[in-house]
Image 1 (tube, helix red, strand yellow):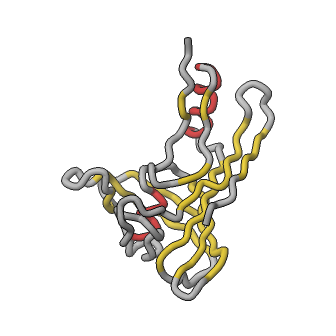
Image 2 (image 1 turned 120 degrees about the vertical axis):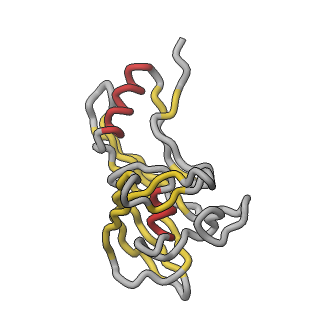
Length: 165
């Protein structure tokens, strides 16, 4: 008997859409789509600070901080490249609401790309690892869109979930 298994993961503090494979074959097919980067993933976040440009892309290599797990650190030599495209949705007094599209799926990619000086320099609101958030506080990062090919029918499916903030 096959147990349902997630195809990809979200950080515990991230809300939103996830994909589960209901059969072994479906799980394998969906996993390959993530591995081959054919899945379109859309996120919405609110960051602490005003982001100046209206859109851009971030390419930063990072790796696990072995002395401070699960924290990730900038690692231009040994790190794996993370690529994120972003655009501003709304600016507030001292915060910015952003839309993110990840081209890679690295651990804490959006959190690090938002907070790092070589990224946006604006941590995600409520982020307890890379910002000023406290444990238990809601992090304002939501997986709002997923588009992939159905493993049996071959139809392109698109799912949307509005952020709760």
